[in-house]
Image (cartoon, rainbow, N blue to C red):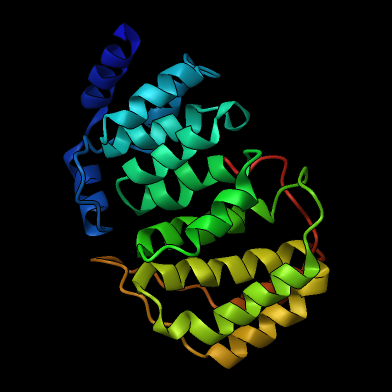
Length: 236
């Protein structure tokens, strides 16, 4: 596809050594040009709703192209097979936790895919699953949550988080924050689980990034009267 070739050339022209260094320090080992999100969005303006191009860009396994593909794709246009193919092709955590997770969350297969991935022996698939579920619970237009199922998920996190793989732990923490912030009936339960879990240690690469603390985070949202606020879209 000629447009894909042109986009890849444009991404390459936007690549900067400093951005590449930042992404490498954050753990990216995939092929990349080092393109800022702002520069990617300047390309996106010309290719909005080109889901066909997004599917081809993701196949390149270039980290910048995959992130742009995640922004460009139309979640409602995916087949389940296409999303599962993206799960297999996803290159690193910015794609796992955002570009891919957004599209799973806003697709009609969200919970189906998430609960399948949570059973995987592959920690990167569990990372994708917890991220996608965290985005999903924040959405305005989704079915009501099955309370029993989500109570069980919070209990599972409380029981297993400290034994999980590195970034899976981070995604579990982020899920507790998302669920507690978006559903008032879960706020106290998420805070209680976080207190029982205790301090969470995650290696964040050569960065100063820190694991967010669930209780102070949710208390701040409560103080702002924003518990229960949801989003039209999780893409950003």
